[in-house]
Image (cartoon, rainbow, N blue to C red; front, side):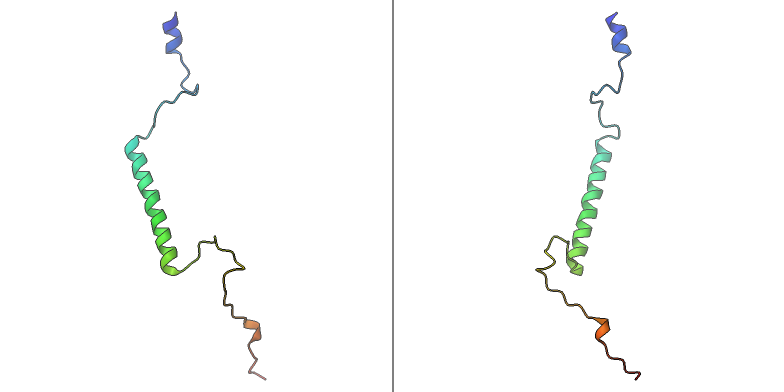
Length: 74
């Protein structure tokens, strides 16, 4: 009788059944994520774009105001 209960065990009962894709695909996915993160960090560094963690009031910004230009058509 106990053998029939083991055969009809629910696979979704919360037990770990393993990685369905395999560890090779998981490592390839991790490598892709690391490469994309490294590429994004390189682009931020090379282009001088801030990451957004700085305090905006502490950073010096040079903004040109287009409304202060003089009208030369007069």
